[in-house]
Image (cartoon, rainbow, N blue to C red; front, side, top):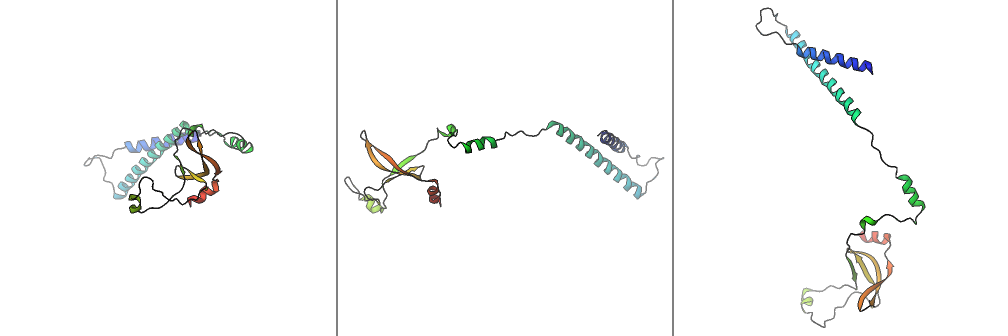
Length: 176
């Protein structure tokens, strides 16, 4: 570890020294003209020094970031899940969805009418539905069939006594 730090320090000093060297001013009397090979070698040396300085800087940043981060801690949910599966009688915490409003409707039957037939309807007209007398009514929640039942009258109001709850398998079949 100390070896890496020493090498990094030496590399940084070397890179800085190469970057600080200035080429002699043009037209200086004591300057010797450089060959194209020497000029090319100088350019390569500067480029390598710049690259080395960038790598040293990136290594420093990565080292700093490693000291600033930590592994995330996630709670183990498997034990809780197994406990719920072993005790099917335990109540799930569904309190957070209890305030969501749903539209519940009951359907006695359906029919199709032409606009002409609809316009001819008046008070006392009878509309024939597709259900037979005594067939169960259908209960929809947000437009999806969830149960069937029979009509009852309680305190002069209509109600429905549920006779059949649709199984999850039947609900999936309705979606297809």
